[in-house]
Image (cartoon, rainbow, N blue to C red; front, top):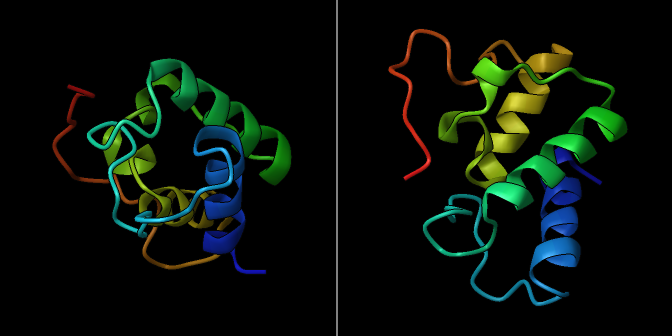
Length: 97
């Protein structure tokens, strides 16, 4: 199973109650009401435990955590799986609103 598939499965099972209809790699968790701030923290806890990574407060940004694709790129970067990195280096920091 790919990293994106694992993350998608976690989101579907924990936040969409098994209904993946309409969830794409680019679906915004916050804008589309998939997760709220508590859900983001639950996702981060899962990422830290399952993938054995550390997520700092500075990394809690939409660029890293607001879609399946962004989360997969972030985790891959943290684990050194891709040259593209975590997705937030050199980018302006956005807020969750």
